[in-house]
Every structure is written in structure tokens, then in C-alpha cells.
Length: 179
Image (cartoon, rainbow, N blue to C red; front, side, top):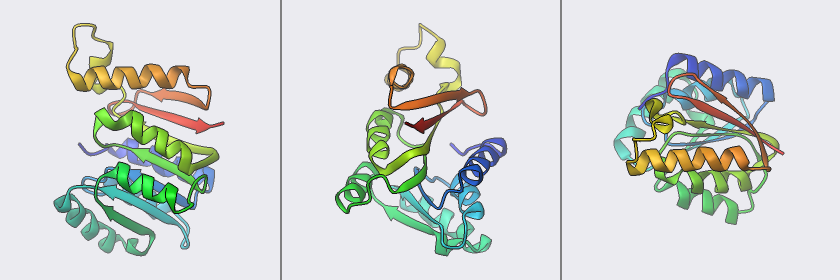
């Protein structure tokens, strides 16, 4: 459920290459991936971290404190879709540089659509678990999560609003650059 060290390093370098200052993460679990991002943000940088599980938030906040990045991380407790809708309604559209999705796989379509409204042109959205342990390529795997990820991957492949690159790191990550 946690990104691997090489995935965390990839997220950090993408944020640095972009010179990102405003980021969003959907699903923080232990806070490892958001910590990797927060550590490379400039002092005035901000990461909005969306998480519905209170225990995960408690764990993540301990690591943010230890690393000295708590001031850069704005943890939002609740359903990520509700948080993202609220951000859009608050006029934050097209004001974020980078976003990372690693949460409820069946919600990937909705998260992606909302993040497309929040991320600026030229901004990046990274999606985790797109290979789903190879199950997305297994025609016999038809459980609801696999089908959902498979459908999401197919829609991304056809989406003309983004340029994509699927990277076989960890459980697969797709890097999307908003056109």
C-alpha cells in the first residue's frame, strides 16, 4: 500500500524538474510519498494531502513533524472527491503544478477528472498501481478493481487532454502531462 523507494524518488525528481510549488496527493497512507514530495518543495511550497483514514493521518503527521515539513503539508481529512470538489469551488482551478493519485482504485476516473481541473496546463498528474500486479493484462482477471483500473488505463491512452508515459516501476505508474 506504500510506494517503493524508487517510486518516491521518481515523484520527488518530477516535482523538482517541474519547479512545482503547489501539489496535491490523493491517498497518503503512511505519508511516505507525500513526505518525498514535501521534502523537495521550496519553503513556500504546499502539498494538499487528501486522506479519509484518521489513523493513516496520525502516522503521516508524525513523519512530517520528524522531517520538519509539517508547515508545507495541508492534510485534508475526508473523502478525496469531496475535498477536490471543494477546492474547485473555492477557485483553485488550474493553480496546481503536480498531483499524485494512490487511493481507492475504483475512483481513479473521478479523481483524475477533478485533478485535471485543478492542475495547470503543463502540470503533471501521476497515477500509481496502473499495472495492478499484472492483472490488468490478464484477460481472466475480471474482479471489479482490475476491471476499473483496466478501463481507466484505456481511457488515459485515448485522452487527448494529456500526454502519458506508463512506467513499469513498483506496481506501475502513469505520468500524465496536461496539454
